[in-house]
Image: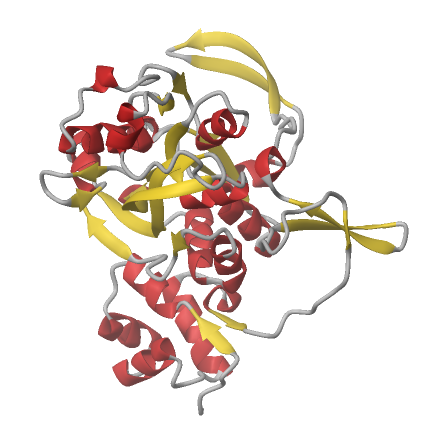
Length: 377
């Protein structure tokens, strides 16, 4: 069948994630390798029969592989709050009193502060760190379809919520943890997926050396969520003209730092070492906060002059940004989890336009390699 210009697919990302070559998939689905190549490149729109065989071969639904890319509608809405002029802003929408109201997702309003509904209550110790609980809901299917991700990137929450819209039966529990803590949770069997953004200047590699060390021989795959710009967050307009960490020290400016194990702290330490600046020469080096949002808030409230975070967080809080490093954010998954249906369903959405649109609108985030398996250990 000829190419359909509106048909999109993420066949390649799912195939490579499962460690299949084009020929492997062609053999299982009883098609030619040229068919697989044509579908992946968008030059060939498969028939219903071929689409069904491909989905069966990959253990997913047809809609996980293919979708129609359509022009999205435009509407007019009333802003609930003023927004900076000439700035593209992310918005949440609701229909109130017969009209659309747009709520700007800026600063603290871009992050959830609501209480999470509970699944169970009780904490009677039964030994070996286990507890006896009483379920608050008999929907065990939802518990079995829950994927736990440990990480610190706000984009994980966007990915999770977009996925849950597409797969209502899937639930994603995002537990906040810095890169090292996320890996430790994965290794301890307390999470399915760990998110990390750590750079090793000795090898020039992102994430892989740290994953190898902490997982200590356990088999895993690293899948890229995207590349993000990391650097100095400063007040809007960068009034003190900071360009380097040396500028901050010379101006006797104050920073806020992240906890040990955080990728942002590791980047700060690496850059200080490159510029031969002692840690103790930086005012506020031991002033610790525990999230990207906390760094941004400290600067937005005028409590400090700078801190390390990402370009997308800077834009969300209307702050200035001085780029220092492009970091790769990877998802680390133990191979023993890869065949579980909820994991496959979640990962299959990395190629979907709904997920892409949520990440692209953030700014400072390159998702051109999203879903690619970058390493196996």
